[in-house]
Length: 374
Image (tube, rainbow, N blue to C red; front, side):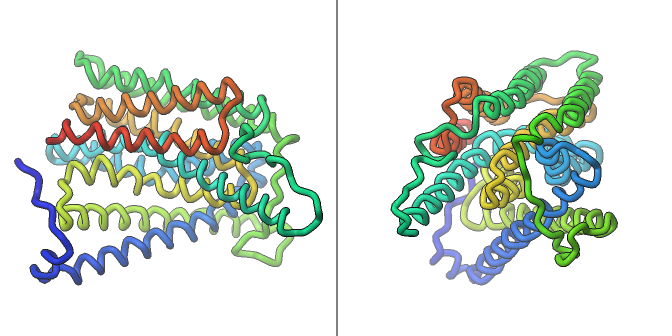
């Protein structure tokens, strides 16, 4: 079936649908604002939740925050693969399982790098404007200096080292067919269980270096030590808002795409993954603005581990898990992005600029998708 013809704004106006497009765009913006604000309250709550559960500060990012923001996508995959009436409907879950890691490894890391650049340069400009006569020389995170210490890079590289072989197996299974393949889905759940246990047990290792000052809980702003019920309530309420706002955001994209001439395939593979991973990206932006870069990057790497295992396990159990050209291409680009990041981390050369360049892999994916879908 040929793709729908691209429509200009004048064509839409002539067809009487311009008002409808404007409404959906406004809803899209409203959802993005709601996601950002709810993520700001969520990271505030989850830091207190980690304190209450005596979880290491890094595990707050890799486990608690990552699990909360990845939960909506995992639920979408679960519903798609278990209740989908057709094979095409079930394939939506497979696409989500592949699109999530791609968006995180490219767009989420890339946006984090750009925000780090802007944040650090504003700090440097503020020091110069202060008139103190002293200028900070490339503070941590500046474009010319690697992010964190060698130990920090080793910590990040360890997460990517876990992710890459699991993801390679995940892609490889999409290219073969054999009778007991569905059973292998259980191995992906086991892999995440091992990662979870490792993070929880080792989560206090970096606590001495990662001093995180807890801001007052939004639900109880005047309390020095908020009540546990308030921490749990704020966490759950913000998760609910994130869940529904994210799904409404994706729905608006799916409606607007065909209206402006984008095919359903392009919308599903290019725009929807970015939308579904918006909470993780927003969390990273908020933590970077608060000066908690380690938590920001840990949130992304932890979410990637969930996306590489839980949705994949569900897909293997309930679908044929067979890849077409577009899904294979997304897998190859994701692996290339991780190899790029891993090489820079191990060499202690990951600067905000190089982190921002990870977003370029998503552009490569988009360009390579054109001949596949046409």
